[in-house]
Image (tube, rainbow, N blue to C red; front, side, top):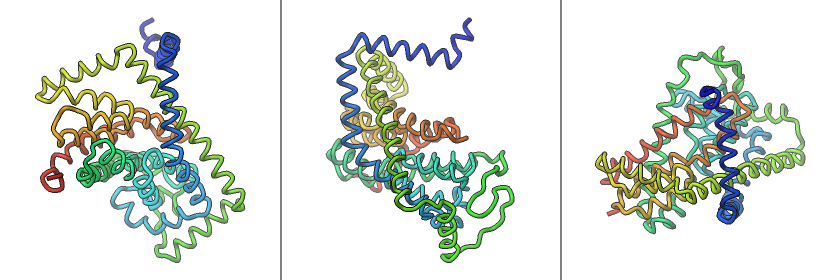
Length: 358
């Protein structure tokens, strides 16, 4: 009996039933939180992410990713044990923020350019905040302190690079896979020709293999982007409602108090608990709460670095949704986010004396 109750499917059903009951008990706060989540999606996420989703689909169809992959393979493979096409995903992920890196990684999987271990490494590295949010929203908007932007960026993106170096050891027990990557089989390790001419040839071959006219390609890219944005919006609204229900039932307050007691027992400040708890679920709210925590600026910045690097369960759900049709697992991503959060927070303290605000 107990084993059947603890089965994941049973627990999921019980949680869903509990949420339905709470939504019936608190209809007004649920509606307000849903509208708030919808507003965030429409005013912030849609204009920020939709162009990148469409552009990434076009670049794959036009063979630009294959071009970049052939050029970057000599650098990406020895450093991160990822094919060169991962360099394109790394750049796009850093520039456009979560969950674009996961989206591009799933596209590389669909085109058989990466295997499972390489994809899991790539998602772990490229799930980062975009610079506009980190600088404009967090450093300037929330903290009102632009001088922390270089430190926050160094800690966040530096932590991501360190995670990438650590993830080199992920999957060492597995040898290769059954995917074909940029002109060579994974197990065979047949060397690719290098250079600009080879990259142009790879782009041309990929374009011929795709075969869709440009008008069809752009139509498919827009349709695919819109479908993904609907999923992202639904998850944002759902987590907004869940957080409001936790707040209405007092669950969030209890968790914050328990976390605060733990921090106090370890010699820290219980004032940090609110930022950690909000950041556990959602990035924007967690970053805002970090700027309001009653601790010195250095500790506030470390909290914000943790929030940005952990990314929040809302982003986790988006990434899991994007990878659901692939063979990539969620667990390595979860572990990488945990490590990234700790590394980013630690880097704030290490770098504070060098590039921290005076």
